[in-house]
Length: 112
Ligand SMILES: [Zn+2]
Image 1 (cartoon, protein in one colour):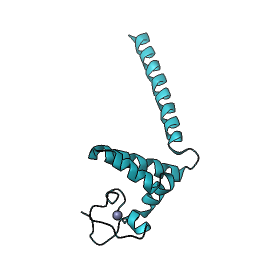
Image 2 (tube, rainbow, N blue to C red; image 1 turned 180 degrees about the horizontal axis):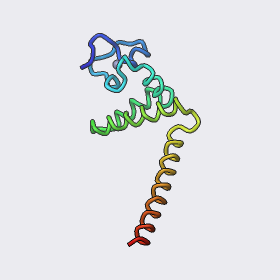
Image 3 (spheres, rainbow, N blue to C red; image 1 turned 45 degrees about the vertical axis):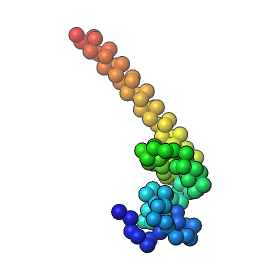
Image 4 (cartoon, protein in one colour; image 1 turned 180 degrees about the vertical axis):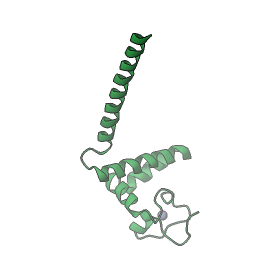
C-alpha cells in the first residue's frame, strides 16, 4: 500500500504531484530513488512510459519494468559490460557444466 501524499521517485524527481493512478509509482517507490535514477539514465522516463502504454497485460508490464530496472542496475554497477558480461559468464558456466556432464557420462560408461 502506497503512502498517500508522498510522491514516488519519478514524480519527486520531476517535482510534480504524484497522482493516485501514477503508473510508475509501483516500480519506483519514493524510498528507491537510486533505482529510478539508474532506469532514468539508461531508458528515460518517456521510453518507460511508452513501453508501459504499449503493453496491455499487467503481467507483461510488470515483467518489462522488472527487466528494465534489472538492466539499469546492472549497467550502473558495470557501465562497460552491463548485462552482456552476465550473459558471457552464464554461457561460460553452461559450457563448463556440459563438459563436466560429458566427463561424468564417459566415466560411468567406463565403470559399468
Ligand atoms: Zn508518481
